[in-house]
Image (cartoon, one colour):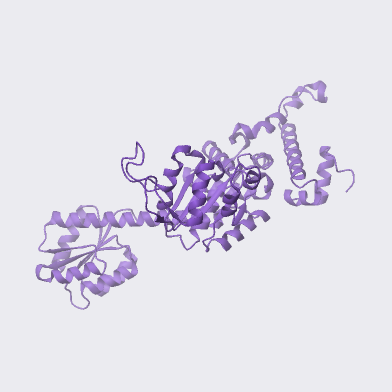
Length: 472
């Protein structure tokens, strides 16, 4: 079906149907007409109109009954009622039941065009809002926080348990681990999901403006306060307030935040009246707030007020088994968004990504995939499509070695098979060392993380000269 606007016209007078069909066909509408309201109710679900133009007085079921049936099938459908001047009261009743507008017969063509155009605009706007809400729901549902590692399974389970409650949540983890994604997932699955989700980066607010940003201000409260302004707590009323990087708040700001959390009400800067505060607070920090509290860099009482339910998001380097899943997820996302037919990633590029330490965590990996999809020249992402920071190990491994150092000839040093073998060995060595480091030297757990058997791991360690392979 094309993108042209679709208009259903229902009137028992075939002459009027013919005139209106010609009028709107010339305006670019796809028009479906019916002189039988019962038949119109049947055809509408298949035609899926944006707007319906319906006569009020028809034999059988009248326009109000047809309106009810059409809206029951498609609540977004905008229905315009046509009525004689003497039946305006019935048209008003149709408006009460969900009609967009009514127009009296005889009508001016330009006036009718304007009414239908306005109805079409509303229909398209509502469809756009629904589409965006669907995208938002999809993006922030737990299924899109990708991972099958034990740590991530625990995160999913905790989201499901805590989301329906009004409990304050503290999310900690390195930058790029997905703290806001978890906060939004909690909100989207809470009883407050129809309320606002308001996010604020506490580290980005100048200290002298924190109180105004949080709690708002009255007109004249300070030099630039030319009008009353609501703060983020009021903006989030009935919903969720996400305080990102809460550990960066000054001591004075921490006191103000603690007071609101304890009392459940706020006072705007320059105001005198207390305002009830119906907000669920989710805070996040890339600092260890327990350590900051013990060192008196963060208020101990505020820490415990925030830390009712805690999430600790693992860095990506501690869950390497999730990297292939994340790669597939972001490949699909950016192949669609950028419009590239990328089918996958070749073995060398995958090895390089698996061996990378990902200091920027999931955010860095997503950025890397977007970069690679944009630059890929074929259906598979190759090592050359990756950002330079990921190719360092590859370029060193395939670099030219002097004949004296390894006994290779100049030709051997540039041999493609030899270059790939050295690169593969360099990547495997790095991955094994990372896995051993991440498991405290536990070779069984390291093998599990790498997706190989214990025997295969020992054989690789021996071949690569990694200490610890002397005894199996």
